[in-house]
Image 1 (spheres, protein in one colour):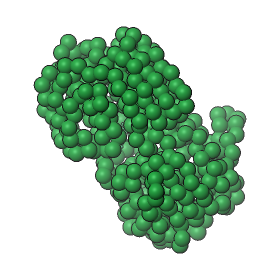
Image 2 (image 1 turned 120 degrees about the horizontal axis):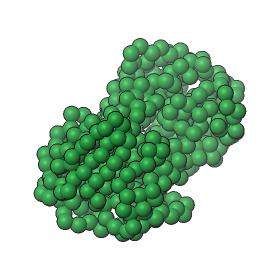
Image 3 (image 1 turned 180 degrees about the horizontal axis):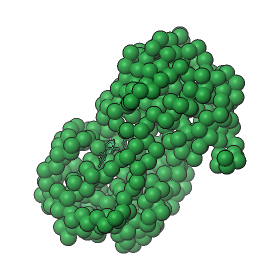
Length: 421
Ligand code: EPU
């Protein structure tokens, strides 16, 4: 087990490039299953979740080579339709392979992904959407076996704009006969990136980024190359880290439009954020003030993936703020950890009330999930004294060497081995 030892109080300053987006790279890697061929995917972040996706592709018969941030996937010999349970349990994104495997080989068997630290996370919308395309779904205990001799275009209305279900259905529909219309689709930028990749393969996907996506089925698609979009959540995390330490940071490889709701909230606190040559510049020039109420909602609303980090910042903003988590049913475990650092913070149901204090105090805390971990790092960078953030394996799922990025900006952070408790 590893942890970060952080000595708080140094303002982050300098310039860094933001990594490619985990949540775009994962479905794009899954989509390489669609057509037999060799793909080159660039700007793929080096993360344990990406390692797991590559291992799944290999277990299905693909060849995967990684050089730095370039991943070459050869799916010519891919012939397996069962995703091993051990890999299935490692990353939930393994369900992204359902759509592409059904499109290419007509069947797929998976074990049901369980709940996780941030909530129950069922896959009913994925299964319902695939069933509309003609997929037969047989569930026996935790095993889900799907088959589809032929996929047929359909009109699918999602009960909730699920990111994963939208992506899975899009990938399954690419080579279905006729037209598929997804209504109440998720609008996240990662869906736009996946659509761009699919269209480069020869698919006909229109409307990605809007609530209605139309996919005209094509008989065949072929392998292509692609560069993954910048990670908007990593960018947001670094902006907040700069803010919480009273620093000044420039970020390259950012699409400011992807962060509109986050930037709007951060400007409300008093952080100065401007567009820069290749991204954004952030400066904490004055005392920050709280925000009456932030509610997480699907894109373009305030992202759930930024809620823990925002909460960490609000513990330091003058006045009272409230944050409500509406996307996941159990994504507020960091509240207890922030309390250990002296935060004046109270959780009631899905809403957190925060009274800003001047400075947090170093403590031993534990990351319960990826974004909670990022929030604790931010808090520790502000705190007086030394903190130890355990559970770094969660952080490594989504942030590429976060400790090195922060150290590059002058933060006092070290990765250490921790004894198992
Ligand atoms: N939901 C259902 N049924 C389904 C699918 C989803 O009820 O079939 C519910 C979920 O339980 C949740 C809500 O719908 O309450 C939103 O889930 P969604 O499907 O949109 O999320 P996801 O596809 O599982 C992706 C990201 C998450 C991010 C969410 C929301 C990837 C690989 N993961 O998950 O990223 O929080 O969208 O934006 O794209 C992270 O990076 O830290 C992370 C958790």
